[in-house]
Amino acid sequence: MNIFSNLLSQTTKPTPAKKQRRGIEIKSPREIEIMRQSAKIVATVLKEISEMVKPGMTTADLDAYAEKRIREMDATPSFKGYHGFTGSICSSINHEVVHGIPSAKKVIRTGDVLKVDTGAYYQGFHGDSCITIAVGEVTPDAAKLIRVAEESLYKGIEQVKAGAYLLDLAGAIEDHVKANGFSVVEEFTGHGVGRNLHEEPSVFNFRTREMPNVKLRAGMTLAIEPILNAGSKHTRILSDRWTAVTVDNSLSAQFEHTVLVTETGFEILTDRTTV
Image (cartoon, rainbow, N blue to C red):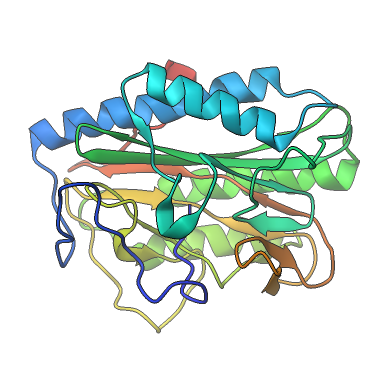
């Protein structure tokens, strides 16, 4: 889930029984181990959803499944109730960019580009991740968009290590996206994650001077999440006050991982290949 300043007056929300802490937190070894577990829960749910999605299902079906599985693993859904959000997942289809609300009326169809974003709160810490799923056979242009979105995530992650800077990550993402003819959505960013679902710092996917160029330190945990549009980078919010869509109805794709900064590089905590 992204920081969405145009919707919220704050970018973080205190988790149960915890007050929001200011600044960038460095997690202890014990806290990192807990985050490995919360992230593993998220990775497991997303992997299972990616394997079960089929035409005819609704996004409400996926939401119910995600909540059930998160709770079965002794966690709670990070998104449900977050500033009034009603789902355990964000489910955004085709030109929907982010924060789509699950609905029994929203039927998944062959050819859809489906984004599923979810989080799990486990023993005081959140994990957060998003995938884009090609439902059945999609167009070549849609397949390329999905591929480049995932590649751009890893281009950014490859820059992560203690001593590197956030704009190193942002530049690597931006360059790969633009080289492939797509646009980077600038209205939503990644973020720190841990005790709160959204923490400092903001993790941009494009070069900017609007925020300090933060130097990475071992123990930081970041939700890195490039969002790509096939057309215009601009979005608008629907009347539900949550769902963001492309202004030109072009397709959108997104991938996200929770990543730990280490002294020598990174650890992808929401790695679906290990669950």
